Image (cartoon, rainbow, N blue to C red; front, side, top):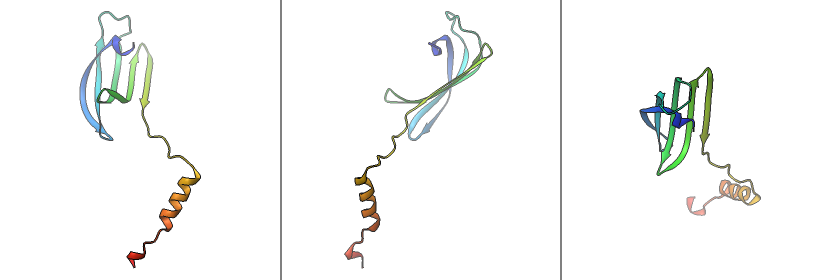
Length: 99
């Protein structure tokens, strides 16, 4: 695996949407790896309770930049007639007690 070929050091921790994100900086090549030496590389990993929510890997080595990304995003709200009706009713609803 690409990540196993290199050594990484954690340099920062932040949170995005309440998910902890750890930033790693590449520090070298694993001695048993045949991978080219890294020029520059960062990995941002969003993990909580063992679930990977997002990562962003950028690695420059052997004159070929690599970039891999993954993120979990919310699904769009469904478009159904019943949803439109509920929205219309909510917008037009008046409460007789509010007079």
